[in-house]
Image 1 (cartoon, rainbow, N blue to C red):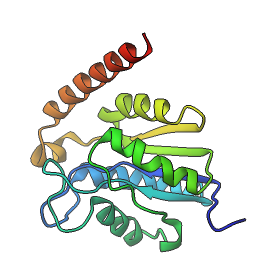
Image 2 (cartoon, rainbow, N blue to C red):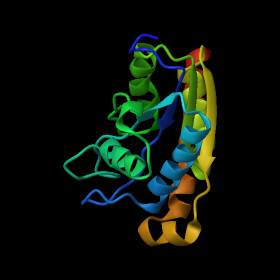
Image 3 (tube, one colour):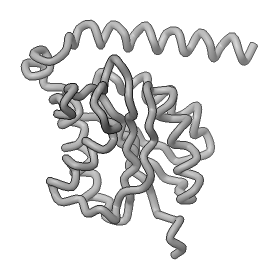
Length: 175
């Protein structure tokens, strides 16, 4: 097998962290789901997303770096990681990860996100990766902990509106 090939990729989508780089509960929940999948698919590599942005990461390192630290602390070895996709949002998660997926010639990807983000992530990744076997997996958001860090109701409302807007834009393009 060539070094730039892998059987599959687990794309772990980013979410907010503190200014000091501490992962909030939503990111940790996604990481835990990714670790479970990494054990189930030991020949898959990890593609981590998340760069910088006022709404999710104002630290001095990309969000994906903190995801990698968490995963490594729970036993995922360094050789299972590929390049980061330093994205700022879900659309960039998909578009910036695409060249990495192509580089590693992976036709199977598992996208890991949160339950409230599932529908939009599914729509975006199925559009971007129409020629690839895409499976979307999600973590269950623990409301009590998330509510201390972020307004989950506000995020859910944002997800509904963002998906509605994406579908409208897609319909306008295809007409």
